[in-house]
Image 1: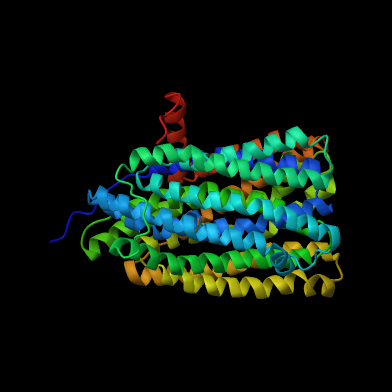
Image 2: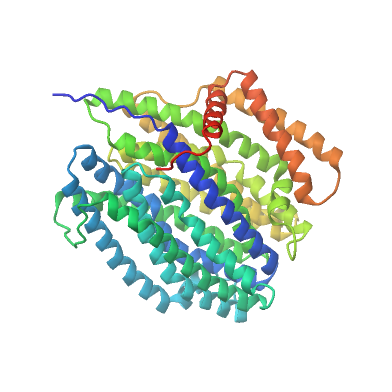
Length: 535
């Protein structure tokens, strides 16, 4: 007997996720601004910090939010939808215990084996630069373990449709590092400051986990921490976890390969890539993650016949794709046409000079190639996870990483030499090649899912209207930029980016883009009510 398909509006949930991510990302940008101000870009301390930050981050990303969301939330949310809170509590407790045990072991091994990791992940680092990187990594590893437990909290909270706290918790992590930089930045040398910053990161990781735990305990009243791996639902989470873990690992390996290649380029490439990543991952997190995070519990809770669920998923997926594209298209255009304005406003100052701003602009312009594909691909992957299929995204992730690695090597090292340009510009080839590979992965994900649940995707007319609107906005912003002339980048950014946003919203409104109207209405409701109670 087929049950009725569960209907649920996630517009408000996506708004809460986006609001939480926006707050945490704003503080993240402030953190990077302080780091750039005190460590600069083309210094050994900056390269050491950014390269060291990648290695334990690899652990938290492997076991963190993306993997847990794909493997844990579908099972836990389904149990909650059925009203089986006792079994849901047992599953959540078992996953918490398993994660704690596994990450503790990995952290211990990681601290002991750090010199080996540095030789693999940063082969271009030697002498004092290598020693500093080793010291920072050893401090950061325990904090990465705490971030994994924080991701478990996020999985529980999201399944209970409590989104705001879980996505604002990283604010405390950023605040801890900002406070460290503010306290020691003026009185410490670059190397010592990088070490102090690592300790600040560990403190922030503990705060991020601790602030979520009380609400988790209040919601999961039947939570029972145990190491029971024989329960059917726990085993399903583990079965789902393995392919997603491998898929995430493959993607993380791609990021590590990029960092490895960057370490072979002149000083400043590793720091430049890390700084640019803060920018081009912002719209992916703010819009792609917001929609995907809100949709996954709803998709996973769908009940009904196979045809009913397929129709339900198509409707949710198509709606989510439109929401994502409305914000990602102008983000990509801004990176391409106005990247110097964005980077200068956020980072220029202190030891981060105008040449560094232009360097970062070129890197994020390369990322614009695949920004839309990478973000839309997140929602397609979430749809597979809601269908309890974690293997299909894995296959396509492997293809993407293979392409990224091969193209990244060619574009970062041989191509600049062949063209006779400065080798440091090869880092832009890393982001552009990753974008090209992202389009291949997105195409495979969409084609395979369409064969399974029916036709999905963005209408060509909508895509044309969005890109046209973004191009008109960029042209208007360029005119303002030329009129303002060369001044403080923070002053230039206000009118340039302001007119860019106004023209984009105005053009999409004139072109009848539904997402423009709904976004403006949601903002109007939000401002008219003052504050909304976050969930």
